[in-house]
Amino acid sequence: MAAVAIVIGAIVLSFTPVLQVRSVEATGTSHIESSDIIRLSQVGQGTPLIAIDGEAIRSRLAQNPWVASVDVRWGFDGVLHIDVTERVPYALVVMGSQNIAWYLAEDGVWLEPSDVKPSAEVSMFTAALDRARSEGLLLVVDVPATVNPQAGSETTDPTIEGVLAYQTGFTPEFAEQVAYYRAASEPALTCVLVSGVEISLGAPREIDAKETVIEALLAEFPNQLTYINVRVPSRPTYRKLNSDSVAPGSGVYGTIDEGAEAPPEGEGTADDAEGYSDEGYSDGEYVDDGSYDEGLDEGSYDGYGDESEYY
Image (cartoon, rainbow, N blue to C red):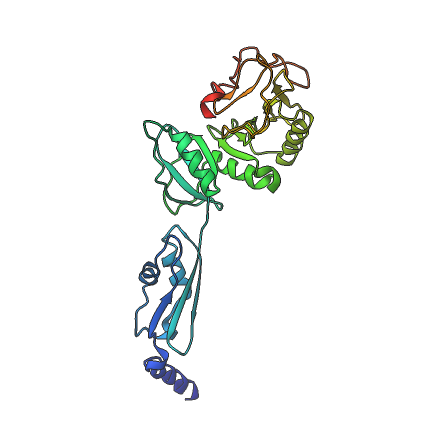
């Protein structure tokens, strides 16, 4: 009888004003209005507090790709509080041959397309690079046609997963040096540093060892390297300019530090905004066995084409 009385009492109390939802409160985020949060919660005034299902509310809110987590709180004052933690954009991904880019979160969830558009004066790559730089995002270009973003879905493509593996696997100090990635395929993953050095990484294995080799080569040949291949970190190769007189500050963003002296005329230089000049390259400057693929043209690496088109 006592148990029955408790159940009946709970039912009666649930329909009293003090144990019903009087209002739903939510604070909007950068990409989600408070009204949208309340609408997606599907909780209205008069809902019994004992009928509130926090997990169901979280599931409904997760329909919005920007929602990373949800905290639901309520008390005897009848106010339901919903706090949303928003996903933060991590990368801007340019789709292969399409003039469209998507925002990607660090957990691999596609967020939404960006409004980056090319113009007659500005290429898609340049527009995306400028946007990524201004928003502090990683830029990923040349992704294969197999990448088909859907808002709210997790990426399953090995190339995108490989980029995330490298960028989160590198030390923060080295990751900050990466300007963008080329992700045509997992075996062909390549990054370009802010300094303009192109690095052929290959599949995301032995990341620590690869970074160690890259850092050692950059330290040994400051402002001289144009290309490093660490697909096999135990047998790295590189290419460098003949001259030691390379203007500091040149790189992927096409800037040169004020006051930098230009190299002597005819020496190999890093051309402002147009990538490294072919002039002054030292043929065969690949380490370990001193050899390289004889079929490669100057300024072309593993079929990527003239590197200057990306600078």
